[in-house]
Length: 398
Image 1 (cartoon, rainbow, N blue to C red):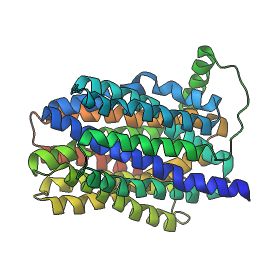
Image 2 (image 1 turned 120 degrees about the horizontal axis):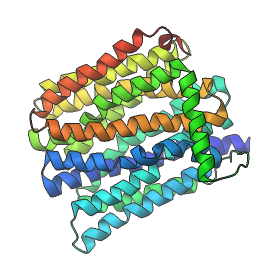
Image 3 (image 1 turned 45 degrees about the vertical axis):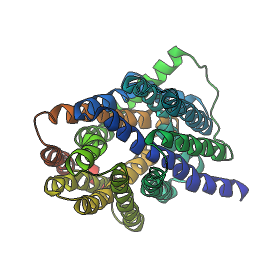
Image 4 (image 1 turned 180 degrees about the horizontal axis):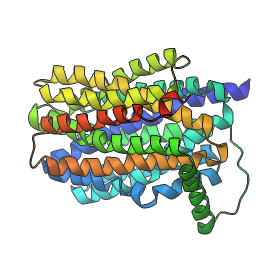
């Protein structure tokens, strides 16, 4: 009973608190770069380079996650992220307003974030029965999406009192609190193995070989990769550009857009929680892919902030469909000992495509207006969901 209580505290609070910190970071970082440079191209380039850790070493993170207790990995990664972010306001305290130093710190921040998602997703099946995983993942996503809703609102309120660089102090506060809450969670037991570079490479190869032998899971990851290539750049770079440079909005306006996405995600999670036991998880995943892309097409018609907020709410509804279903499918069908590696590969596909997509937005903004980019990328992203429906097995997975 005590163990279940500690697990429930972990499920409800850690994703919430950690993601509030991350949401404030997402608002503060992009807006800070736009403020300093006022350049779409440089902002896209900076955002792209901060995701290089995933491209360079993300593939091996899963093997590291599988070698250590997951709660320990989460605590360590969260603390290190906080320590790195402390340096950004310190730079401004000493009047060092260097985009390149900020980019370097963001690089390390994202590097320490790499174990978070694989460790969290691999931890849940060690504590929860398979038939309860969809509901557990829904709880986690409610916590996460509540953070995506209230994190930007907190950021918007803080921006009325503090300069944008001081928001990173609050990120640190939430990160450290998340690490403390993780420390009380039930510990997962990991079989002791030799820890060496050779071992990490061997275990990474095992994960890759597993996906080579499982065509359906491989197809899900490929669809995830392609979808994120077309969705993440508009989401991370396109929205602040649209708000600041085209609609003349403020950092608070941008934060409010992010909050509306979070509100839509909460509604989407509620829907998934209600229908998840009656609809195949694979079909939910494909529907989510389609909504995720198709909703961005309508950004082409945006003329004011009210329209953008409404469309962002609609966009947010589709995100839980694909995230909750994809995670639950993997947790149910993949051996526990491989979960860290498989989720790391999924995270790499998302983060690496986020980097490439962000860079593409910066380059394409030289030739197209941002609303046209949303239309093009939205059509391509929604096509991933349609293509997935043609696969003989994905839509029937449960």
